Length: 203
Image 1: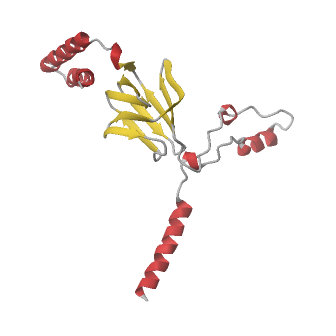
Image 2: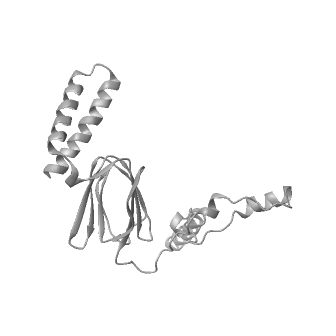
Image 3: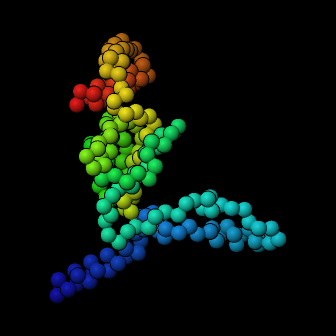
C-alpha cells in the first residue's frame, strides 16, 4: 500500500512539474508567428492603419529540431567586426569553456557556456583549424546548431611567439609593481591572456 501511495504522489508531482516546466527555445515552433497581442491592441486604437512590424517579423525562422541526430554540427562563429564561420557544417568543435575544454558534437544537449582565453578547434574530417579566443559565449542548441560569439579571435598560425613572450613579461612586471587594486586587476588580466596565448603556441 505504501508503494502504491508513493507511486501516486510521484506521478502527480511529475505531471505538475511538467506543466510548470518552461520549454527550451529550441522546443518552440520553428516558424515565426506575428505578435498577435500587439496587433490586436494596435487595431483597437488605430484601426485604419496597418500595425508596424515587430522584431519577430524580421527574424529568420529557426531550423526545426531533427527527429534523428544529424551527421554534422552546424556552426556560426562571429566576432563584433566579422563572421569567421557562417552555417559551416563540421564534425566537432572544442571550445575553451570557463569550466574546462568542452567538445561539441552533433546532437549535443542544449547548453550555454562562457568562454575563457584559450584555443577553440574546429574539426572537419582530417582538417583541424585552431583559433585563439579571448572571451565570449557559446550557445549550443538541441537542433545541432552552435553559435559561438567571441570578443576577439585569431587563427593560431597568425600569432607571433616573440610578441606573446614580450607581452607576458611586460604584464608580469606590471603585476609585480602594481600599487592599486585596479592596476593589479588589469595586470592580472594581461598575464592570464598572455599565459593562455603562450600555452596555445607551446601546446
